[in-house]
Image 1 (cartoon, rainbow, N blue to C red):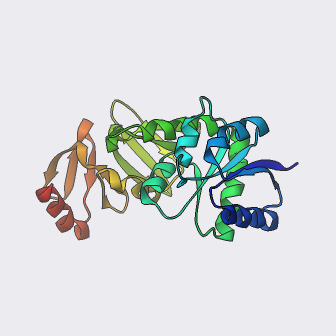
Image 2: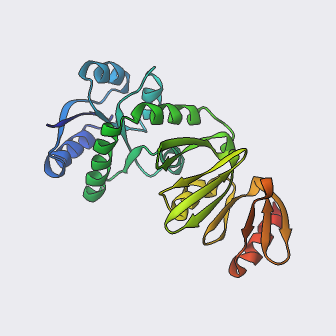
Image 3: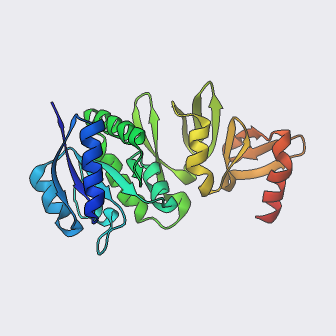
Length: 248
């Protein structure tokens, strides 16, 4: 059984290229409609009830994010397409939503489509899309939320409640304010990429700390954090870390 999809992009050439790539590399996808007009996107998506929407971000009059915000219950899987835009990619990554950077790489297309089909089975689209909309309306960096996949499902965690992340055996234990730690199957490297722009610092290969939660630096090379949390600072990072503290 095929997975239905819609493509929304203001450039006809971009639509043609993506359609062709989907036919060649993702035969399990059936494109049921396309549009160059983002203002038509809502009606088109609602009428076709497609399972996946390939949605360009940078479009005139209405961005892809604006299209998403126009839905009361956006319960379809989205794969955003964008020229490299660090703000857009950062926002999308926080919510574990798929994206493709133009020009689209064939292997990346196959991977993101495969992940989207898995997500359809798990029925997580609505919650992730709602989180993206909420984050786009949040001004302060640490008030935003990220998705943390755990053994029980997806946790939506406010960034400023994270005290520090501790890597162990490929997993990450997330220590938080006023609640038990979460154990995620994502590595410490994943969370470093996700949080480094939000005043987090990798003080040790296995410890990522929230600078907002620092209470004290001990000369023997340890950081005291909120709620009696403690993290080591590796020798090769102490100088740069102390410089950061002095200049902050």
